Structures are given as C-alpha cells and as structure tokens.
Length: 318
Image (cartoon, rainbow, N blue to C red; front, side):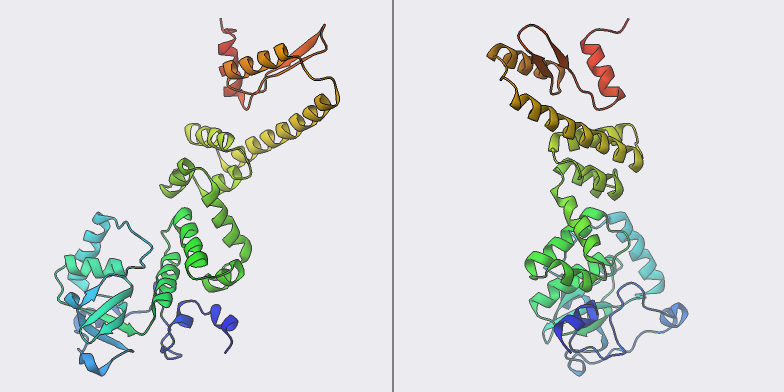
C-alpha cells in the first residue's frame, strides 16, 4: 500500500503490527461494563505478548510519553476518574510500546494512567504496540487532536507540531486527521494572533468564530481593540465581523486618500507636526488637510464607544 493511502487511516496506519480487525479506537471502543467490572482480565505473561495484543502491565513499569502534547491535566477531573476506576475498573485500556522486558512507554491514555495511580492500582490493562519515536509523536498528537474537549489553540498547536516535527504538508496533515486543507489552515492562522487573543481562545473566553473574524484585520493593535470590544461587550460573531468590515472599508478609504494626497502638493512641516500631535492626543490617526488657506481635520472612530471617547476628549458632554 502506498504511503498516501495509509495517511487517511489515522492512528491505525501508524501501528504497523496491528491486525486489520484490531484498529486503535481511542475514544469510542465498545465495552461491556458489567462484564469488565465483574471479571478481572486474564494476566498474560509479559514475554507472551512482546509487541502486540492486550495484557496487564504493572503500573510501576510504565513511563509517561515524552511526546505528550498536553501538559495540563485538571486535578479535580483526575480525582473523579480515579473514583470511577476504583468502582468500575479500567473500561478502556491504555496503549503502550515496549522499551525492554520490564519497561514500557505510554502512547495514549495518560489521563487513565495517572488516575489509575491515584486509585492505587498495581496493574493496568494495556495494548502493547511497536512504534519508533516518530510514530510515537504522531500517535500522541493525533490522539490528542481527536479528544472532544480540546480548544482551538491546542488543536492548532498540535497541527503545527505535526507539520514541523513530523515533516507533514497541510494536505497530508488533513488526511492524517480527517480534515480538509481549509479547516487545517483556519486553525493554523489562529497562531498568528497576538498572545492575549490566543490565551482568550485557549481559556474559552473567545470562540474560534470570533478569532477567525479578528484575524482578517492585519494590524495587531486593531486586532486587540476588536478583541477587547468583543469580550467587554459580549459581542456576537456577527457583530465582530461587522466591526472588521468597517475597519477594512476605512483602511481602503484611507489608502485612497493617501493616493490623492501623494498626487497633490506635500503638506507643510507645521501641518505634519499638527497631524502627529492630534493623532497622539485622540489615540487615533487624525488627518489634517490644508491648501495654505483652508482645509479640514478628520478624526475617525471605530465604534459608538470610540466616538464617545473622542467626544469626551473634546469635552462635548454637558
């Protein structure tokens, strides 16, 4: 089978020794809860399953995955999972690779592994697979991406790592994670936003829809302005898109004005200095035009709130 055809198989494509009917289903493996909780899985001798199949492995012989893309695990959620494991046992086996006869390394299932240690388990059911470091990284990242509770920034960072550390192109990455290239691109673009906005998306204070609208503005200061407006006023995605359009239209108008100004006589040094002072005073780009006898001053505003701020500076409130 060619490499390209294998890409679309996700995690199972990386498990070279997996039988066709034993594909790794990280989050959707059907399990009979009563059967598993009522009986203890048969412990297979360690040497009997050197690189394949499920067996019980001592928790003390398992080390964490150094390629684990997720560095933060909610402690309260881990304790809840540990309590569930104490009552029902491990419903879904972890997946490991063998390093030596009595040493294994996690491929997937670190939450279950950590919770099992909290629950005081001495052994844990696990699928034993063979994988090199490259495959370990890919499997850890792909499993992480398939989790339902990942935020958009975590997904974007995982996509970026797959591309940079596993030498995947966007279309190859899309096949590997089951997404089209446009979706992959939209996630990766989020990493170009200022850190404050990325953190807000990561902490679920701003949706991906909001972030995707904001990224269409090139200027970082304007991105941060829109972001603060969206958070402080609880703006909908549609409102943010309208605000972005207003800024884009204003930018196009400013370019047109600049072209007109460039074709006319250059402003005097005094006018240029005045324009700079006014822009600094009002916190926005003020345009001053003069033909030496008459002219006009333009003070743009981004929203009603921005207009009120400018009016307050002008002391036009009663």
